[in-house]
Image (cartoon, rainbow, N blue to C red):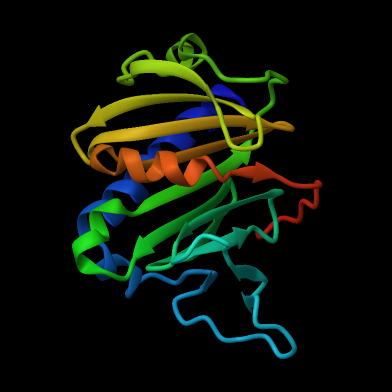
Length: 207
């Protein structure tokens, strides 16, 4: 990823993240998302999954959880059923926001930003991030293994817009996946990421 794109990418994520975390549905209701799975209809012929404009939402083996399979990027994971995904496409990448329908759980909302990454590395390092973003707060960085064996960098961060966040950054086949949630949703996000897995490549741009 070039320096310019990296800076724009971080700025975009912070702005979108701050808006969603602070304003919740007030932003969602007025924006124009590409698609939403707020009301999940059944697909004729199956009781196991539903589809909204290409978004596959399947029932999980875990009670009260669903399975999300992205139609563009090769990944899937399980998440609590009270959340629903909304996709926002941008020329720099895509943002997928999972927001809880339950107002009491709204602060557990999380987002995934996916964009191209030009460097062929297995896992991004704090030093690589600081190279382009020397002022970014990277607190307690650790390399971890996800549910499918993929490597990721996890750390806490903090800024004036969002506050303290949990960050999970993954490099996979020249794509950067940044998963962000409020720090207080750390335990839930860790539970979700245990189910994360990459699938056979099937990349199609949303833009």
